[in-house]
Length: 186
Image (tube, rainbow, N blue to C red):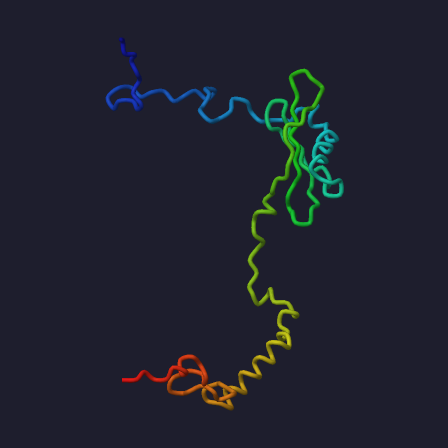
């Protein structure tokens, strides 16, 4: 079995430096094609994209056409405003593609995408500026009555029991099972 020669991962220090890779050479993880101008036929297929989004949304939840962007060769994504109340800043999308020399748009995927406006928190506002006048009103009547009862207990009875049934030495109520047995006999 013969062993094939391999190139070292880094050039040796004593030998000539290796030339940098050519600019047009493919690099791992980088697609060869460039995303450029959208396909002219697919960019005008807004009605096909809107009908595709209508499969997952109601007409009143789909807003105006926002943009079209190229996803590669003969592939585009159409973006529409989302009018759902809980999805402020989101956009409906429909990705369309076509075969070379074909005039039929094919729907690849539809869905809902977030934008920066939906994911980023709004600017911070200090608490004192966020308080509204209705936040500063007193609590409901139920909590005021509870506070009045607590004040009467503290003023009237030192142990806080309005009936006076608590034994100060043992801390048990009169008639509790602990007193029923009585003290232990020797």
